[in-house]
Image (cartoon, rainbow, N blue to C red; front, side, top):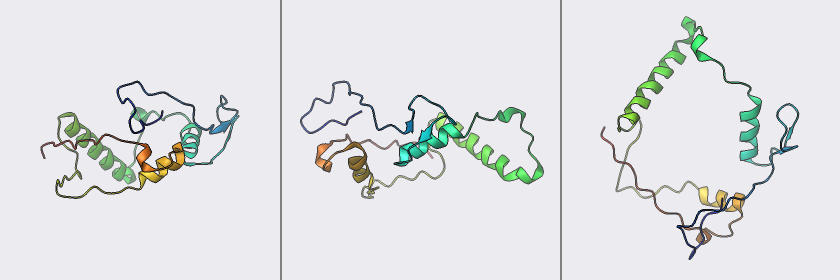
Length: 133
């Protein structure tokens, strides 16, 4: 999908365009496909597809040496519940006086989607969610 350019109607539905193919043949599944690996999204597709089916964790038998996995899953469950209740998960800190952090994402978008300069796109600012802590 393309981002709106300056002066374009931002209320119209975005148009979808096909991206670069990430494997040959495009409709084949692993192991019958060759992945191009030309960019990060192609590598992501390869990792998703070649990892195999999702393991059924409900029948998993963890040993005492897997205590770290158990602790991590407990933290995830607790923090997911916090977000479901409208709170921020741990580690989220808001500082309204801090300047916007440049993640260098715009040059990557320009390269990947073919924008020539940052003025070719006009993203809407996203307001930060203020949850109770």
